[in-house]
Figure 1 (cartoon, rainbow, N blue to C red):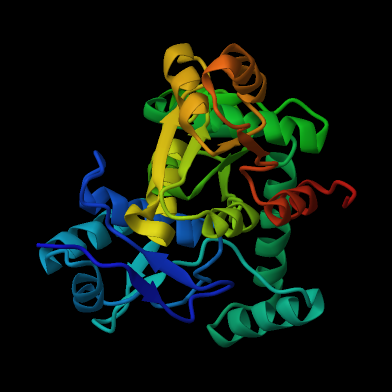
Figure 2 (cartoon, rainbow, N blue to C red):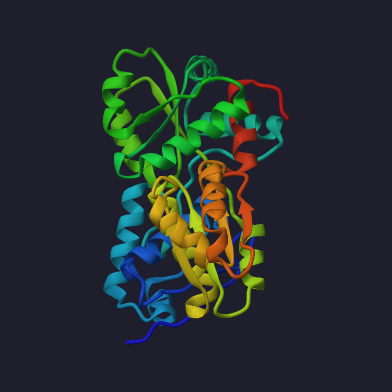
Length: 331
């Protein structure tokens, strides 16, 4: 069965497309999962927005409905989405939103009073919550699973630089032991790890905050300009980022573009990538390794390689939200 390019309309900030690359080494279900998680984590789907139905996604992608339903099940397991009374799958709220603080406080208090809580009880509970959050904010930790330790390292480096304080990375598997001696802490992660982090923190006094990731809109716009037959290289210390990038590029260009990926420490693969690619995308980590690979393969290339340095993994607005959470001055 063939797979088709499909367009999903009206999803948050930008139009989102899904594409299943049949010749990819990434299984079709994983491609769809990665693309949906990226769309949610990068804010293309807002909180409370409904995902396309399994019937729609099956018709658009050529995947069997059972396969799509398995992807939905995986998404529910991560805590990113939820079922609502048989009406469909919706993006699950992860954090409060809105800019009118006074209105939010009034709405919250009105709701609590209407549901039977006396005002003195509301006051005590709110003060306890605020005190707990302030205590947690004194210590910030990044976490990700060992199977993609690189993405945790990227987040740790970006937050350390943005917040001007050390933000250590603790592997998810080590998190329960690490927080056992802590009175309070704030653990940040991305959309891929939400449910596993929530389970690891169960019963502790530690708070979790998922951070929205960068949407790569300028990079995707450049990829859309490339002529068919172009080769795009992606370099990252995160295997998960490489997999996601391959799925997302194919979701926009299908088989028109050949995607090459490499870890910066894989010298042979990296040199092969820069020798072949017309455009190379690299994050802040691995940039020096790419430059060295370009210099080492200068004689092998017929044309200069276009190099794009992606400035973020964490969305800038997510970092600003974290700064507010920590009580730091806004940039």
